[in-house]
Image: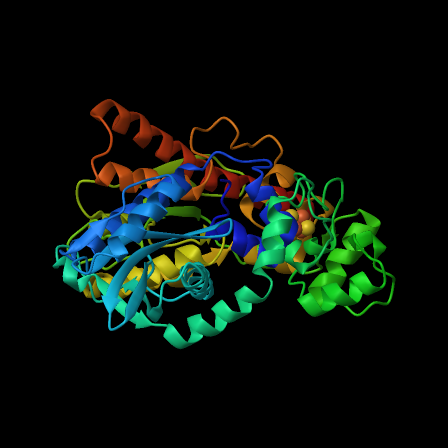
Length: 482
Ligand code: SF4
């Protein structure tokens, strides 16, 4: 029997076409290295949660119908107090509860999440599982999330890792909302033809938008408008606009949106009168700085909590005078021990005592502030570094706009426009998420010595590209003002 999963149902509630696409595996992508890491992490946390309920029985079957039969048999055995991966079927809907524990006259449903704080989607996850379990005849009396505790530290007992959040009332309410049109939605999801796709605000971050759905061939859609609200999107749709170029003159936009609109209409870059002056505030030598970090649900090193951000490496390029030669410095921690302290000390030495420290985004500032809080004895030196920071992305956001930026200012968007000769294409690591995961996996001992050697080279090359990219963007902007 073809079954519908929680992921598909929840996607279909937002957009039936999206649910249909997932069910029918349209444009199915290989999971990224980061996705695979998070899946594995989720499984590990699930196992740890199960270790707390020693009397539990695991429903191991992968096939949903088989798992449902096993669950039913276990639920009928009064000696079984807890069922892990309890599976229920209702019509085509399949649900797996991380844990079902017996309570007076019914069951307590648990979902284990590798998160330290509750997210909106957690309630939907619970409500879906509750809905299918109830339809399948299970009396669900209580519903809870098991989240990770912020107070947990590396090496603490597993009992201290989890924190219960009771959600019975809100899950039941959401479950009732889900039940209203679950049958019709199921028919749409399983239908032979895809539901009609209509552009809506929900398309904004949809992976199908430009690959196979309503955004195909839509150059500079409304979603490129900076900070577009749902209300404004709906107003624009009412007058038939799909692209930025469809927006009529005089339509009320914010200052940033208006600037972007003007740039897109004219197809001519916009340069603020102050760009040259602002760039001149950067003092030579300029130190271009970029960090990479990692974070894991289960801490990697003593003293750390779940999802502590650990700076693992940096790249610095130094230009002593405008257009002069570049000097390089870098650091990549040894994953077998917490690199934070050594990194902070070396960073202070490598950044010297004068000149601006150019970064791209506010991320480096947040990392240095966290280091300052962590290491009292380095606080003075780190404060001086903070005072020298110069955020190049903030300069672009306020003082320069190019039609090919498509309303974005990330380095991956601006670099190919301002310095087309620079590219991440030939690098083995192409994004920060992969860099973070690879470091964590080295720390977990998942690679051979030869693999570690190669990964370290790739990490250094990736981080180096970020600072070289910044050098090129800075140069390009200076040329524009000259
Ligand atoms: S792009 Fe929009 S209509 Fe298409 S699947 Fe995504 S959310 Fe649905």
